[in-house]
Image (cartoon, rainbow over all chains, first blue to last red; front, side, top):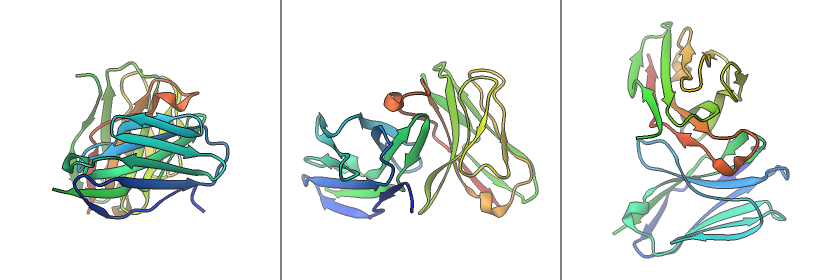
Length: 109
Length: 115
């Protein structure tokens, strides 16, 4: 079993839709939870991070962590074509990071 | 512009040849990492360095070597390339090693094709 599971998609939504991206994990020792956005032929860039269970909001993005269910989510409100990218979840314990395989998102104008 | 510079951006390499992928950061980050990214497999850690002078093996280290002579540079060497090493290689760095709150800064990647 992989440490981190993420549905690869692809996911295609109309502009303005609410997008939900999810990851599950198996290691209860994970402490920090992150979401990275990766545009085509670019390196991943850190989008959001959170430490504890609950929600964290940043503009149109909300990161949600449920440690009891070992489940994290990223919600994108009012999605825009510029949000079209691959989204990777990541989590770690110590300095060992574990990444999901990424979900490809396309927002159609 | 602060960040990570990787070179080359892409390369086609004959099997059996030796190749060094270069990575330089100007953020004075302590920790540096090399990942490979393959479709369906995601990012997999090859080698890492928590600080200059130290290195460690990641999930898929075979066929690769690294060195960390100073804080800024972290080259990755393929001693004798094989087709299974065809991948996109990302160098990354982080400010700390004991907390994930800093996250990683990634380079733009090197696309390597071994034929």
